[in-house]
Amino acid sequence: MKENVKGDSSDDASAHFLKNSVLYKEFLAEREEILKHKWIESEKAGSDIGFEKALLDWIVKHRSNWRERRMRENRAGKTPA
Image 1: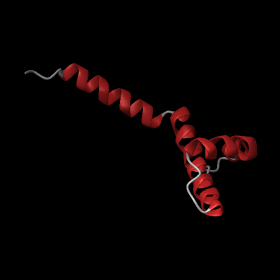
Image 2: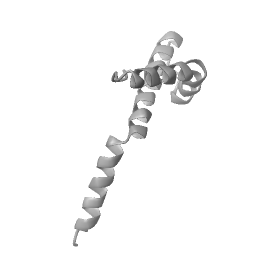
Image 3: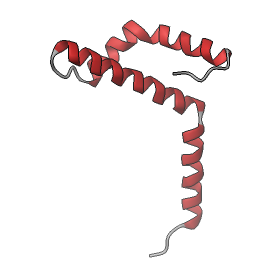
Image 4: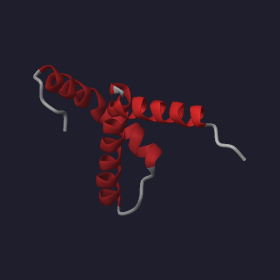
């Protein structure tokens, strides 16, 4: 069976673009914060609270401030944490 060389390079280019897109980087950073929140809240609860509960809780309690801080850091030329 022949491999589609053109398709492979297109897939590589798509993967490269995705990894370097600002939107994808923001998604990964937000996901990391949600996972941290999940860990902290699970520790407090004494059991795993689950991703969905952590996501909803983080959105309600932290997302706005987190985004504002990232925007300020980006404007100041800092690399967001």
